[in-house]
Image (cartoon, rainbow, N blue to C red; front, top):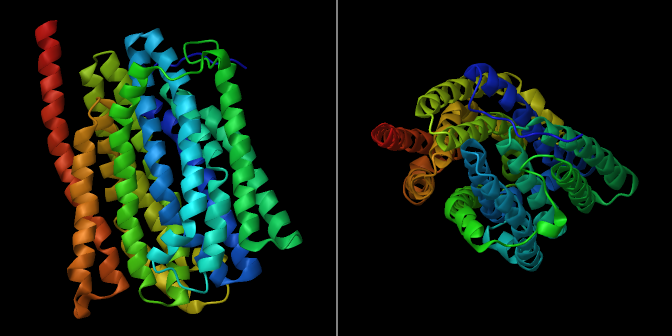
Length: 455
């Protein structure tokens, strides 16, 4: 059924924020179920070593994929601002430039991922007993990364147009397919880690096809027409200008996480790697619930800026920060309360790994809402068209602080422990959020003054 563009600049704000965000949360949870299903199925069939093998690839995969997904953030901002301003040509050109960009980016990632996976995992000090399995998983995963990017770009366009339900429906179908294929490939075909990787890329391909089909069936400015696909130079530059800093930021986040993973690997114990991987997977469900508000802030603010409604911008930021803090704290406490039981779903053969997972969960779940508040402010700044400032603040506040922590405090014998290593996360969230709030206040005041002087 065709869909029309939805305006986010009108109507009761809190209600619209919640109705808009809840489908994004569900969509993100389903995306995480891809990886979680991989870990659970392979862990129950092949043991904790296979859990560690899949989990050890996450930081590296995100390092590369997040760079190109960052460009989809630029796509979403431009589409949202174009809708708010009523600029039909901007919306049309952005959509028809973004899809080829996703294909080209995915092709580059496939070549790099397949050729360099083993060397990068060795560089990360991945334990020898999981290295071959991790390499196999990464190489297969990267063979399907074009579909991953197409889904994310297409979903970003739909959300900018006010449609968060369609990506949820398509990913629901793909998620069920992924779990079913996991069971067949692992339990029936005995493909192990390779089987869960194959299941993931097949399901991602299905979700990509469904999203592209939805764009092609729209009857508004966001309609995708295959004959109009092409690279519009000026539009591509806008996407790069807004999205490249987001991509660089995402990659640098992943670099710091790669360094964290390398520090975890330095303990050279299988149960440490496995416990860290299982905990990280659980944390992902809380994070994606919070990150949905980041996307809400980005698209609501983007449309409101296009419409020059700065009063609604301020109200959007206040309410999304409050919502994400409540959601993050509530979800974190819920996961922590059932932490041992949830970790037991992933790990069935190592009590030591479960204890490691609980150590990480305790630190993360009690402070994770700070990460959500930081992400909402990042989304608000990007929705206002600010690209370099959020990147710079995050590089220093998140990546810089974590790397400094790893090479100073963590190296001291008295503080060389997993608990101390994990403390670098909440400290980086507090610092980055504080600076982002200061930048936002200066920017919104300037925009309001400029709008008042013009009127």
